[in-house]
Image (cartoon, rainbow, N blue to C red):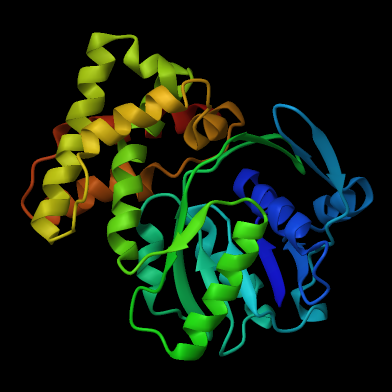
Length: 311
């Protein structure tokens, strides 16, 4: 299979690295990174992608391209850009996407679910991952912790599409990305949304790692309030909830105490955050369904004010 990953951020470099290592002994697979930034793509081609874990560091010569028209149609394209860049990235990547290309969305939040019926050709697939990744420098990713990745079709799939996704799953598993196919990917995405709602903005506001949120009774109460509001919105929408969202969020804080959330990484780097696709999505859906979300409303306002300071 010919597999591309668009977006050389933390998650994009992590998945590219693990897929590249998995494909190293399988000649039938080709892995490449796609970057809209020509100068950065050139630098990454010269320096390679550095994949770091707690115990080791590897330099991987993963091909990086900013010329989609030179690549041709892909079998699979992982979309690892920020939620607010999806539309622009899809236009940029359009030469890569054919009628049978699996277009796998790996964003935070739920804004990307609007692409369940892709505006381009291709077959939309949605994924959620709790793999921990920190971008230390352009092309230098630290694998901060292992998690679980779920993939699934939003609507019904054909046998051929299902078989293609199974091949992707097999390669991910070979690359030591613990993953499985979900028959209800929407509930899986919402399960991660609850966790992001409770953790990401609070870590960005306090400029601290995940575990810090459990050290203050006041912050822990705020975390619970944010998640409970999101839960009430999900219930109003008929979303299947398979485990206690508050308990799951606290468990993630405990298990990833030293991790730096993606939103805190964005704030520290002076980048726009995905607040609109996470807590902002809860406020919008809350209004739509008549659910009060004062705590999420307030947290969105706080993050917007932080963003204004460096824009």
